[in-house]
Image 1 (cartoon, rainbow, N blue to C red):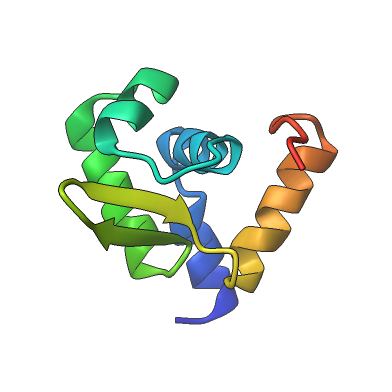
Image 2: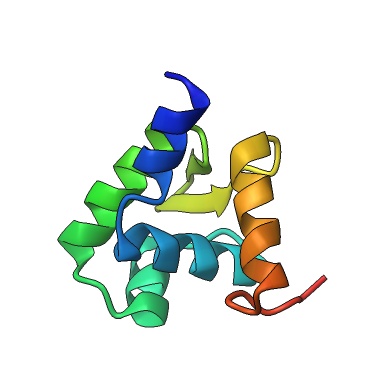
Length: 95
């Protein structure tokens, strides 16, 4: 997948942007329940969006007692996208 396709898949919906925002602002791993509380999206929509984000490497999935999610800081495109969202004030600067 080239960069253009990855970006289109990564930011292809408002739900994905809300999930990226929630995961970026969360200082720990997040469950689907936590993402539901923070984004007010339907659980099924969260699962579908997370599947896409995990598949392109923007989000990491970890399996403990529950499945947990976090932003993949090693992905250059998601890091650039998050920096942009912080720059325009969409994501709070927590650093």
